[in-house]
Length: 134
Image (cartoon, rainbow, N blue to C red; front, top):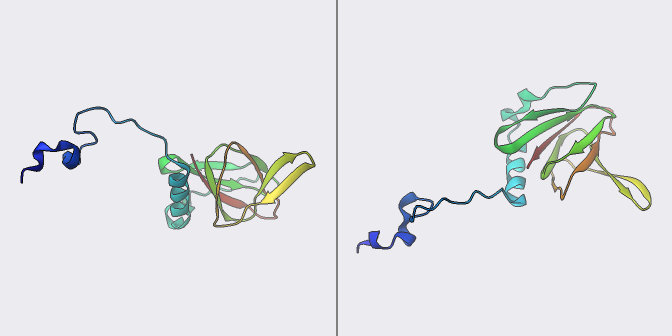
């Protein structure tokens, strides 16, 4: 049976057998979460890049639209990423509500999906390290 006459089924490794350009789509929240979780599981690939600066949070870019952030004690900032996870230390999400300012702690090794910019702060006595992707 000659399947070369059915290019839509066999595609022979092409993105589109008709030669059309495939649209590049941004990664989904699930794909970003899987990326961050996989990075968090392999600290030997990125831990050497961690830099501790007592004056401000430091971002270090990683491959594939991901980055890590080190947070000095008592410092905070805004994260514009789609997903994040805490790998060391303490971080809290700061939110303004009708009752005032609230802080909700981030749990280590859980991936959090952000609908928009998130204000994070390090309430702990030690540095915190987080991974992010967008």
